[in-house]
Image (cartoon, rainbow, N blue to C red; front, side, top):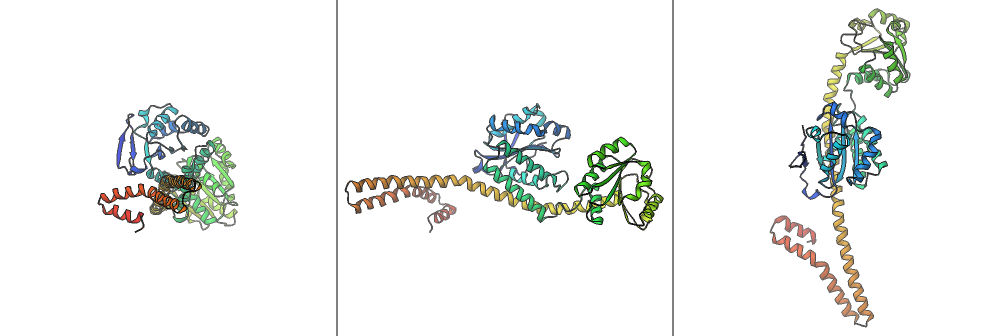
Length: 445
């Protein structure tokens, strides 16, 4: 599968790879901006693993792009969900980078062709900004990707593959991503049951620094919960699991205490928050166990979250006055509502991205045309210098000042008006209304 979003024309290269050309014919120049890569939408995890760059590989890869392919700007973004190369250069260099990418990872080009996408110019800029804002992520609006984009940018700066064009591009990208975070609700709501559980806990307890948490289980869900808890400031974690070794391995990651399941009844009263997710076929935490723990806590409230199916915590716990139990179904409802809210926020964020990419392209066009203005002014200066020097020599030779000044004025005006007059005549001969208006604007009529 190859993506062709926003495509107006295709070019089929000798490799059989389609390149996307957006409708900017006047901008297909030496410094065309490209985004080449694969992600979770276009490639299976097995291929993403093969194409991933380890952190220690990135400096050498950037050096190769700069030295072997003479790429002027290059940034490599490699995460578990995507490998993308952002670079600028001549249009034909896109195919060279494609072949280099396959060779660097010792892959056949045919393995990649149906999974790669290639964007250029504003489509590439738009894609980069969407990625940084979390709009292209597996979990819509996730914030980690912005940090990963910044890390990729910093690696490129250290490697010397960030030049003024990309410096401006990435600074604009970071500004757009920040605006998306601050001006929309894209990251305000939990969109996984693990994060929803932690978000609920934070709503109830406020700060989590002094809250004691008991995690029951040691699988992926509990590991994700532990990660979210520590990111939100929780420091007092205990892990209980049927297999002590697995609990110990998880506890080491988060500096947590380790318990066996048999210790849970005696230690349950210590926990302000209990989050459970095991593969047990029978409940691990019963109503009587929680009731006894609440008595020991002198009826200080306890927040319990059951992420397991079948249940780890007996449903009857909800009958206890100071126990607040949420099940996976309760959280799924919250997640569904939050996903809907994020989709609405994503539409607002998309507008900010479009605006940001358009502003960058306007800046880029100005830089492109600035060379014309600089060249034109330089030619005018050269004409002035030449004629002034001639006039000074005539005066030094004793010629009449009035005649010298008149000749200088005539020759200067004629030389400066020659090319513009010829261009204006050509425009007027086309008899196009737009040309007439352009002439009026140029000569200030």
